[in-house]
Length: 81
Image (cartoon, rainbow, N blue to C red; front, side, top):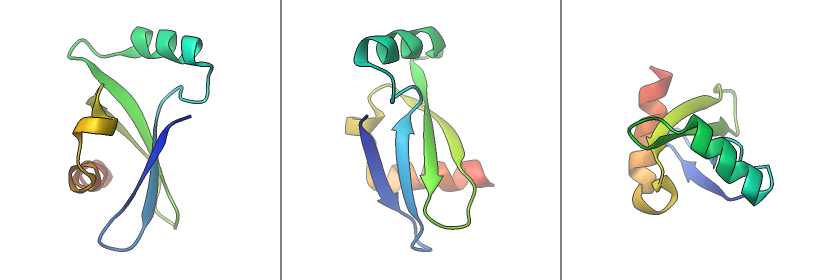
């Protein structure tokens, strides 16, 4: 399972992973394909290290490579509001 970690301005560490990332690669690809938005976005779940609540984001399919840490944190904060 590929995951990404970022830290926000309040020093909360967030671990983000694409939904279905813990399935086998073939099953994960099929599940992602079935749930992919018409605009190409996928569901990403970000879990905090502290007391904040987990957030679900809709991000571009290439979020792991294309989205900067700063932009990922901005998406997390926006979803919390």
